Image (tube, rainbow, N blue to C red; front, side):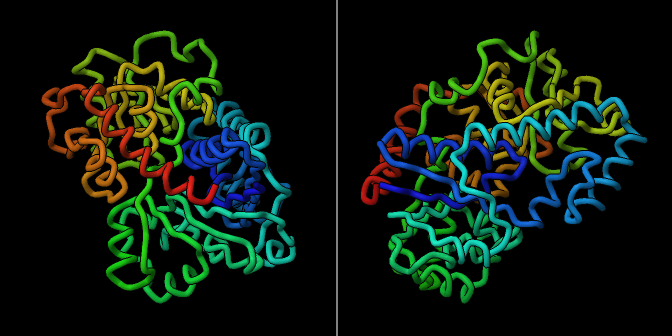
Amino acid sequence: MRIGIITFHASHNYGSNLQAWALQTYLEKRGHQVEIINYRSFIQKSIYFKPFDFSSRYWYKYSLLSSMKRLLLYPSSFKGMTKKWNLFEDFLKKELNLTCEYNTREQLCNAAFNYDLVIAGSDQIWNYTNETSSVFFLDFLDPAIKRISYAPSLGPTPERVPIDYLKRYLCGFNAVSVREERSKEYLISNQIIDNCEVVCDPTFLLDAEDYESLISDEPLIKEPYIFFYSPSNLKLSYFEIANKLGKDMGLPVYTDRAYYPKDINKYPYIRNFFEVGPKEFLNLVKNAVCTIGSSFHLAAFSILFKKDFFCINGDADSRMNNLWSHLGLKDRSIDFSASILSVKGCDYDNIAERMQNYKNNSLCFLERFV
């Protein structure tokens, strides 16, 4: 079967890249011919710009202002940040089966795709506060092409997505699945669609061994460490918790972000380590003593590699809450006043059975179509 996937595959975000690779790899293992529709809007390209790259009018001003600030405040990070950008682009080119690049809906409409099935998802492609576009509801396809969604997220607060908007764009789907119970409840209770299933994130369709094929055997960091990651700008309270964990455990806390020295020098246990693409991210999770942050996919890969992990303020996120409820991991979420040492280690013997049940339901959904 010829299958196309459209998702946030090209964001310079570890979870986005790796969930796309996971769904592609799972389908290939089942014998299908798989392509990722390489839609990269100009807005997205302007967000993930290369330092001091003025080759495109869409990211010129972003690259100039941000790069000048970095050069003034943290000049030693410039070379590493350029390498980080290249690591993401290399992953996209070498590990994902991409079509030619499309930047607009009009280009997609004119492409005349010849797929048997197109899958929308995963990641937060239906989050109305993100770069939501009708293309992620497959409105550019020939109506004769079968279409389903697999584990898209409506974001931490699905209720923000307008009901009429969803009704308009979901009416042409052969089947809809989402990643969170809260999203399913919103879609069904508001009569947006008649039926919907909750499935696991694509990263859980594979095992740790599948991801180990992407990474080297050698740890990037040669000493015991804690890995600290969040995909967005953080409040100081996050640094305080991560630093406290490092102090309590007597371990350095490495972060993949090139935070300015003025921002993290007050936290003696936190250290920058930022020449990190998707493969390096996996290496850092796999070889950490434990992980801490506010990322769904940090939690996901910590589970896959059987690491103790702590999710800061995870109870406020519907994606996290869904994961906790399926796997019995509510004690992984800590608030800003929590004592980290009071949180016990993960019981992966118990989690394994829950994970298999979670995964089996998702496999059954996919197997109906592929």
